[in-house]
Length: 217
Image (cartoon, rainbow, N blue to C red; front, side, top):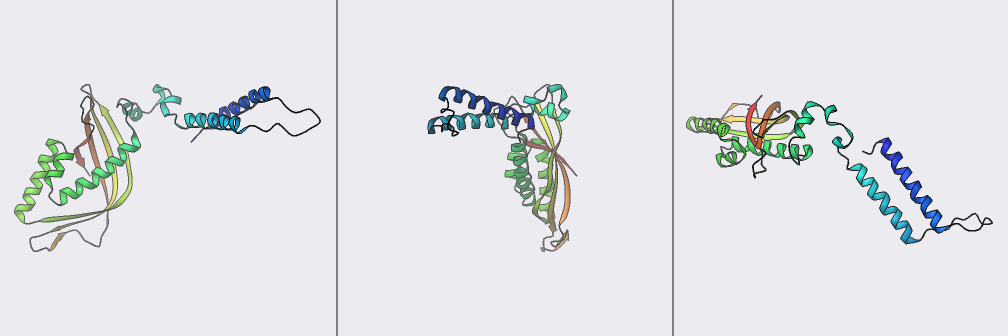
């Protein structure tokens, strides 16, 4: 959203452009009240200049107008991550959340190994193996997200970045025994669940993917 000051700057720019064109093109004699119409080429130039200025103002980032010292601690940490875009990250985090909880319910270890750190995936595999031994199967249906937000960011001296995300989602979760009888959960009950997940990535790595490193309720 363009701020009020930006709009003023844009208007001043338009006025200056108009004044310059007026001086170049001149006006008709005083007896006529009609201004000299702009040629299509001149009008196009004005439009192009205005649009470029508008785009420049619209694409200004927070750091362009806010001193680093005035930024909240979380934003300062995010600025340490090269080419980081919060909106893009959260879109990816929501997709990862859906894939991971579905893969965990389906005992899909292969998918989990590609999205979760080695330490955490070991714990998840242990739960999956125990369920298989007990003849228990799981079903998870993600209805949607109520909110998703970054709550913490840390970048250590080794350039390991960790971003904690709070997911509030609506889910239907079931556990069934070997006879396909529901032993936990209710297929007609939608749970409102809060999950705190931490993703990590080595900033000096060529791999751009973030991996899930810890979870808690």
